[in-house]
Length: 148
Ligand code: RB5
Image 1: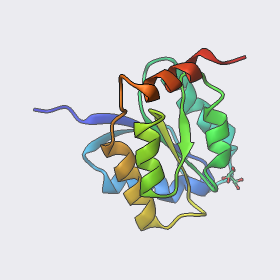
Image 2: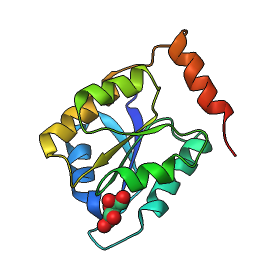
Image 3: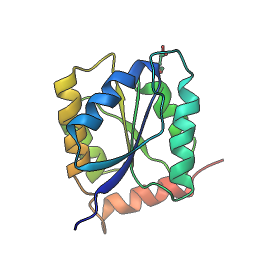
Image 4: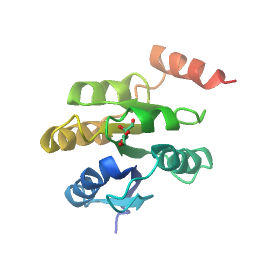
C-alpha cells in the first residue's frame, strides 16, 4: 500500500471555507489540519506561526496557508528561516515558485481568488518540483544563509 503524501494546512477565519474545500478536493493527501476550524475571528499570526514551527521542527515539509489576502499569513510564515512561503493566485506563479524558489508553503487569499482558480493553483504547486543543481539552488541557498 502506498503512503499518502502528508501536507499541513492552516487558515484564519478568512480562509477556513477554502481550507475545507481544498481538503475535500485533494483527498489523496493526508492533510495535517492546524486550524482554525470556524468563522470566529482569530489572528493570522497564530496560525502562520503554528505551521512555521512545524516546518522549523522538521515535522512537516510542505504546507498551505490561507487568510483573507494571503499576505498576513505569508508574513507570519516567512519569519522562520526554514520557510519559503509564496502568495500565489494563479497557476503560473505557483509553478514558478516551486521551480525557481523551492517554496515550501503556498499562501492563498481566499477573498481575492475564486474557488476554481484556487484549486488549480494548489494543484500546480503540489505537482511541480524544484530544479535542483543549478542557479536556482544557488539562489535559494543564499536565502537560507540570511537571517537576523
Ligand atoms: C482578517 O480579517 C484579515 O485581515 C486576514 O485574513 C488577512 O487578510 C491579513 O492579511
